Image (cartoon, rainbow, N blue to C red; front, side):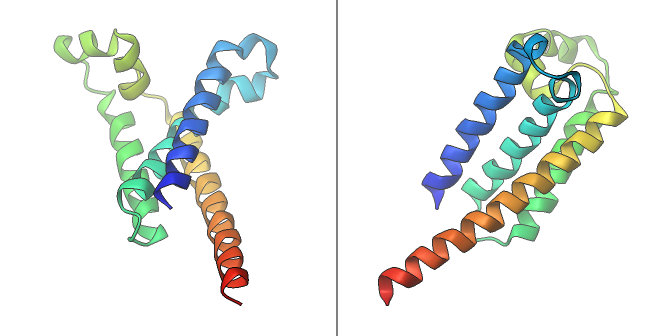
Amino acid sequence: MRIVYMIAIIISILLGLSSRKYSLSLPLFIAQNTGDMMWAMMVYFGFRFLLVRKSLVTAIWLSFSFSFGIEFSQLYQAEWINLIRGTLLGALILGKGFLTLDLIRYAAGIMVATILDKVMLVFIQRRYIKRIC
């Protein structure tokens, strides 16, 4: 399962970065919301990768806590952390400024990732059961 989650992480990153790079070519709604949703999906799949034997609920709660924690940390605007946010990697991980709308985007991303995860698990279990029989 770790391989599946690693692939999901990579796809989430690629789609998220692509949504930023090609935002002018995408419909406005998708361009504005996809990057943050993909970031939250990557966080979810990251927790599933690290905690593969834990429940989906654990991954959901950790993903919400981490994503919302990062967003609320953007209310803190000290010089040292703003220097980190000023770098490409720092901006991608920590963001730049608090937006309530981002919390909704993160929630949507985590929910979509959870649904995809459940579908993947059912698909893999069915294939496994067919192999045994």
